[in-house]
Length: 231
Image (cartoon, rainbow, N blue to C red):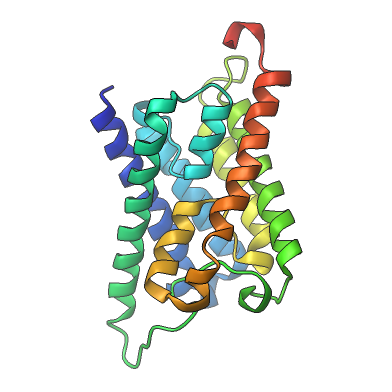
Protein backbone atom coordinates (compact mmCIF):
# COMPACT_ATOMS: atom_id res chain seq x y z
CA UNK A 1 0.00 0.00 0.00
CA UNK A 2 1.16 3.55 -0.72
CA UNK A 3 1.93 5.84 2.19
CA UNK A 4 -0.97 8.09 1.13
CA UNK A 5 -3.44 5.21 1.51
CA UNK A 6 -1.94 4.27 4.86
CA UNK A 7 -2.24 7.82 6.16
CA UNK A 8 -5.82 8.05 4.91
CA UNK A 9 -6.65 4.86 6.77
CA UNK A 10 -5.06 6.19 9.96
CA UNK A 11 -6.95 9.48 9.63
CA UNK A 12 -10.32 7.76 9.19
CA UNK A 13 -9.63 5.15 11.85
CA UNK A 14 -8.63 7.73 14.45
CA UNK A 15 -11.60 9.90 13.51
CA UNK A 16 -13.91 6.93 14.11
CA UNK A 17 -12.26 6.07 17.44
CA UNK A 18 -12.51 9.58 18.88
CA UNK A 19 -15.98 10.18 17.46
CA UNK A 20 -17.37 6.89 18.73
CA UNK A 21 -15.63 6.94 22.10
CA UNK A 22 -15.89 10.56 23.20
CA UNK A 23 -19.20 10.95 21.37
CA UNK A 24 -20.67 8.15 23.46
CA UNK A 25 -19.21 9.68 26.62
CA UNK A 26 -20.70 13.14 26.13
CA UNK A 27 -23.90 12.35 24.22
CA UNK A 28 -24.98 9.10 25.85
CA UNK A 29 -22.75 8.67 28.89
CA UNK A 30 -25.52 9.28 31.41
CA UNK A 31 -27.48 6.44 29.86
CA UNK A 32 -24.83 3.83 29.13
CA UNK A 33 -22.45 4.53 32.02
CA UNK A 34 -18.81 3.54 32.32
CA UNK A 35 -19.40 0.10 30.82
CA UNK A 36 -21.08 1.54 27.75
CA UNK A 37 -18.36 4.14 27.22
CA UNK A 38 -15.67 1.49 27.61
CA UNK A 39 -17.39 -0.73 25.06
CA UNK A 40 -17.71 2.20 22.66
CA UNK A 41 -13.96 2.78 22.66
CA UNK A 42 -13.28 -0.93 22.27
CA UNK A 43 -15.79 -1.33 19.46
CA UNK A 44 -14.42 1.59 17.48
CA UNK A 45 -10.96 0.05 17.47
CA UNK A 46 -12.25 -3.45 16.78
CA UNK A 47 -14.34 -2.35 13.80
CA UNK A 48 -11.65 -0.18 12.24
CA UNK A 49 -8.90 -2.76 12.72
CA UNK A 50 -10.93 -5.12 10.58
CA UNK A 51 -11.92 -2.35 8.17
CA UNK A 52 -8.54 -0.74 7.43
CA UNK A 53 -5.98 -2.64 9.51
CA UNK A 54 -4.85 -4.41 6.37
CA UNK A 55 -3.99 -1.04 4.85
CA UNK A 56 -2.15 0.82 7.60
CA UNK A 57 -1.77 -1.68 10.43
CA UNK A 58 -4.63 -0.07 12.36
CA UNK A 59 -2.73 2.11 14.85
CA UNK A 60 -5.15 5.05 15.29
CA UNK A 61 -2.98 6.26 18.15
CA UNK A 62 0.44 8.00 18.25
CA UNK A 63 1.47 5.93 21.27
CA UNK A 64 0.74 2.74 19.33
CA UNK A 65 2.85 4.02 16.44
CA UNK A 66 5.73 4.81 18.81
CA UNK A 67 5.41 1.37 20.39
CA UNK A 68 5.33 -0.44 17.06
CA UNK A 69 8.34 1.59 15.91
CA UNK A 70 10.20 0.54 19.07
CA UNK A 71 9.13 -3.04 18.41
CA UNK A 72 10.49 -2.96 14.90
CA UNK A 73 7.08 -3.03 13.23
CA UNK A 74 6.99 0.52 11.80
CA UNK A 75 9.74 2.24 9.76
CA UNK A 76 11.06 5.43 11.35
CA UNK A 77 10.27 7.39 8.18
CA UNK A 78 6.55 6.64 8.60
CA UNK A 79 6.31 7.58 12.28
CA UNK A 80 5.76 11.34 12.00
CA UNK A 81 3.32 11.12 9.04
CA UNK A 82 1.28 8.53 10.95
CA UNK A 83 1.14 10.74 14.03
CA UNK A 84 0.09 13.81 12.08
CA UNK A 85 -2.72 11.89 10.35
CA UNK A 86 -3.94 10.48 13.65
CA UNK A 87 -3.97 13.85 15.40
CA UNK A 88 -5.84 15.49 12.52
CA UNK A 89 -8.42 12.70 12.56
CA UNK A 90 -8.91 13.14 16.30
CA UNK A 91 -9.31 16.90 15.98
CA UNK A 92 -11.93 16.53 13.26
CA UNK A 93 -13.85 14.04 15.39
CA UNK A 94 -13.90 16.47 18.32
CA UNK A 95 -15.10 19.21 15.97
CA UNK A 96 -17.99 17.00 14.87
CA UNK A 97 -18.92 16.16 18.48
CA UNK A 98 -18.73 19.85 19.39
CA UNK A 99 -20.98 20.76 16.46
CA UNK A 100 -23.55 18.16 17.48
CA UNK A 101 -23.51 19.32 21.10
CA UNK A 102 -23.94 22.95 20.05
CA UNK A 103 -27.34 21.99 18.64
CA UNK A 104 -28.68 21.26 22.11
CA UNK A 105 -30.66 24.08 23.72
CA UNK A 106 -28.66 25.83 26.44
CA UNK A 107 -25.36 24.17 25.63
CA UNK A 108 -22.23 26.02 26.77
CA UNK A 109 -18.73 24.66 26.22
CA UNK A 110 -17.12 23.97 29.58
CA UNK A 111 -14.23 21.95 30.94
CA UNK A 112 -15.08 18.32 30.33
CA UNK A 113 -17.78 19.02 27.75
CA UNK A 114 -15.87 17.01 25.13
CA UNK A 115 -14.57 14.28 27.49
CA UNK A 116 -11.07 15.69 27.94
CA UNK A 117 -8.49 13.85 30.03
CA UNK A 118 -7.08 15.11 33.30
CA UNK A 119 -5.45 14.47 36.65
CA UNK A 120 -5.70 16.20 40.03
CA UNK A 121 -8.58 18.65 40.01
CA UNK A 122 -9.40 17.61 36.42
CA UNK A 123 -9.51 13.89 37.25
CA UNK A 124 -13.09 12.50 37.16
CA UNK A 125 -12.74 11.18 40.71
CA UNK A 126 -9.97 13.50 41.96
CA UNK A 127 -6.99 11.17 41.50
CA UNK A 128 -3.52 12.69 41.88
CA UNK A 129 -0.79 13.41 39.34
CA UNK A 130 1.09 10.27 40.40
CA UNK A 131 -2.01 8.09 40.11
CA UNK A 132 -2.56 9.43 36.61
CA UNK A 133 1.09 8.91 35.72
CA UNK A 134 1.09 5.29 36.82
CA UNK A 135 -2.19 4.35 35.21
CA UNK A 136 -1.45 5.98 31.86
CA UNK A 137 1.99 4.38 31.60
CA UNK A 138 0.86 0.95 32.79
CA UNK A 139 -2.34 0.84 30.75
CA UNK A 140 -0.56 1.92 27.57
CA UNK A 141 2.18 -0.61 28.23
CA UNK A 142 -0.46 -3.33 28.54
CA UNK A 143 -2.26 -2.15 25.41
CA UNK A 144 0.92 -2.29 23.32
CA UNK A 145 1.84 -5.65 24.75
CA UNK A 146 -1.52 -7.05 23.62
CA UNK A 147 -1.13 -5.45 20.19
CA UNK A 148 2.39 -6.80 19.68
CA UNK A 149 1.41 -10.25 20.84
CA UNK A 150 -1.89 -10.45 18.98
CA UNK A 151 -0.25 -9.39 15.72
CA UNK A 152 2.81 -11.62 16.01
CA UNK A 153 3.31 -14.42 13.52
CA UNK A 154 2.66 -17.08 16.15
CA UNK A 155 -0.68 -15.61 17.24
CA UNK A 156 -3.92 -17.20 15.95
CA UNK A 157 -4.76 -15.61 12.60
CA UNK A 158 -7.78 -13.35 12.32
CA UNK A 159 -8.29 -12.59 16.01
CA UNK A 160 -6.02 -9.56 16.51
CA UNK A 161 -8.84 -7.03 16.17
CA UNK A 162 -10.92 -8.81 18.80
CA UNK A 163 -8.05 -8.98 21.28
CA UNK A 164 -7.13 -5.33 20.74
CA UNK A 165 -10.71 -4.10 21.02
CA UNK A 166 -11.34 -6.06 24.22
CA UNK A 167 -8.05 -4.83 25.68
CA UNK A 168 -9.05 -1.22 25.09
CA UNK A 169 -12.46 -1.90 26.66
CA UNK A 170 -10.78 -3.33 29.76
CA UNK A 171 -8.37 -0.40 29.96
CA UNK A 172 -11.27 2.06 30.00
CA UNK A 173 -13.13 0.10 32.66
CA UNK A 174 -10.08 0.42 34.90
CA UNK A 175 -8.94 3.96 34.21
CA UNK A 176 -11.95 6.16 33.36
CA UNK A 177 -12.32 7.23 37.03
CA UNK A 178 -8.64 8.19 37.22
CA UNK A 179 -7.88 10.20 34.06
CA UNK A 180 -10.96 9.66 31.88
CA UNK A 181 -8.62 7.29 30.01
CA UNK A 182 -6.26 8.53 27.39
CA UNK A 183 -3.62 5.91 26.41
CA UNK A 184 -3.90 7.80 23.11
CA UNK A 185 -2.50 11.31 22.57
CA UNK A 186 -4.69 11.88 19.50
CA UNK A 187 -7.79 11.08 21.55
CA UNK A 188 -6.66 13.64 24.14
CA UNK A 189 -5.65 16.40 21.74
CA UNK A 190 -8.99 17.08 20.03
CA UNK A 191 -11.06 17.65 23.19
CA UNK A 192 -8.27 19.69 24.85
CA UNK A 193 -7.91 22.05 21.88
CA UNK A 194 -11.62 22.88 21.90
CA UNK A 195 -12.09 23.03 25.67
CA UNK A 196 -8.92 24.99 26.43
CA UNK A 197 -8.15 25.87 30.05
CA UNK A 198 -6.92 23.09 32.31
CA UNK A 199 -7.59 20.44 29.66
CA UNK A 200 -5.10 22.15 27.37
CA UNK A 201 -2.49 22.86 30.05
CA UNK A 202 -2.53 19.19 31.06
CA UNK A 203 -2.40 17.89 27.48
CA UNK A 204 1.39 17.38 27.54
CA UNK A 205 0.86 14.74 30.23
CA UNK A 206 -1.33 12.68 27.91
CA UNK A 207 1.35 12.71 25.27
CA UNK A 208 4.33 11.94 27.47
CA UNK A 209 2.94 9.17 29.71
CA UNK A 210 1.28 7.02 27.02
CA UNK A 211 4.37 7.28 24.81
CA UNK A 212 6.60 6.19 27.70
CA UNK A 213 4.41 3.14 28.33
CA UNK A 214 4.33 2.30 24.64
CA UNK A 215 8.10 2.59 24.19
CA UNK A 216 8.77 0.34 27.18
CA UNK A 217 6.44 -2.31 25.75
CA UNK A 218 7.90 -2.04 22.26
CA UNK A 219 11.53 -2.31 23.31
CA UNK A 220 10.74 -5.11 25.80
CA UNK A 221 8.84 -7.13 23.21
CA UNK A 222 11.56 -6.75 20.59
CA UNK A 223 14.39 -7.50 22.99
CA UNK A 224 12.89 -10.35 24.98
CA UNK A 225 9.68 -11.83 23.56
CA UNK A 226 9.99 -11.59 19.78
CA UNK A 227 10.74 -14.90 18.09
CA UNK A 228 13.67 -15.26 15.71
CA UNK A 229 11.26 -15.78 12.81
CA UNK A 230 9.93 -12.24 13.30
CA UNK A 231 13.27 -10.48 13.59
